[in-house]
Length: 470
Image 1 (cartoon, rainbow, N blue to C red):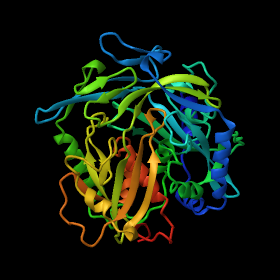
Image 2: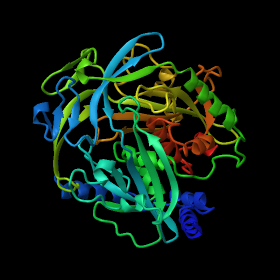
Image 3: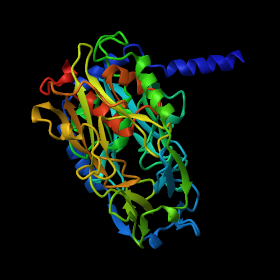
Image 4: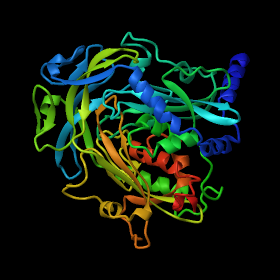
């Protein structure tokens, strides 16, 4: 027994990050030389691999079938994912329904880290997905569902996945279960990891070692850094933006912020349940799509894919197709203790734990220009003058489940006229508190985590000014 306990202790010790990991990440974030070469490498990978995506009718789906009597779209293995119906009953008695992706298994989103010349680098992947705008984007080292890395598809093994499944292979810098889009997935989570290694790791043609600073610069480019890379990057333990005291400079203590979130969850009255896909109200089905009768929301479509550099080179699958780009905007303000972020507690039908912290404005599934009831602060972020817009880019969402879904991501500095009184579901939270809370799953929407990664890319950027350098 003692021997087994010693082995477990040694394994945990080998995976515990060193005390100076935040400083090492800061040095990596300051290293930006050579970033201009990455676009050329991604262009080479686009030319090197065959990748074709064609919209097809549902009856041309292979290994997928429509379940008689329900209309659900299901893979013949019962694995990967399925598209079913979700019925939602609001607290006031109103009901509505929609298609939803059901994928109960937990995938792996992992990035390998290694020092070169005393600077931490990260192994990033030129990743092709059928729904990508690109179609090649910068992804994590490994981006795989459990069905993929266990080779249910009988294809090639997933490169590097062993580093994220075996306890003894490196030092864990971050490891947390994070949610996916709550408007489209039913209680879906992925394991987000960064593992540092010391031994030799060869980068294949579709992988490249980059510094954190290079990745941060690439976050400013439209549709280049994919969603899976962004969510992993958001949980990196970067150095504090303000005073080392946990509650210094913030309007609320950690306990007060968590109590605010718990209160929103406790008051949550929405009920959800699965129903047959054929029973979703106000949705119509044709040979080529399942769409809302008023033309809003995402459509269910089918695609055929040819991909020369993937574990499986040919397949078909359903996707959710976005009609129009959405908006995710974060309002920030200066303080003596570092930047503060205006977050909202947001309930979505597929959210794992009722309510998560979201950006100030999150209108991400069907545009934002003609909403019947514009959300609070939408007009303010859209009308912000250029000098207060600290970050702006169009970034794609996960291309393995969404067809060309993208959002405009904005970080906007609050002006002097920003209201002091806030709706109950809004709260100012410091950047340091966000970094601490993000280490615990189901606290932030994937859109909020994207904006945390983008906010991190502003650190040390004196040319951008603004609240990050307060």
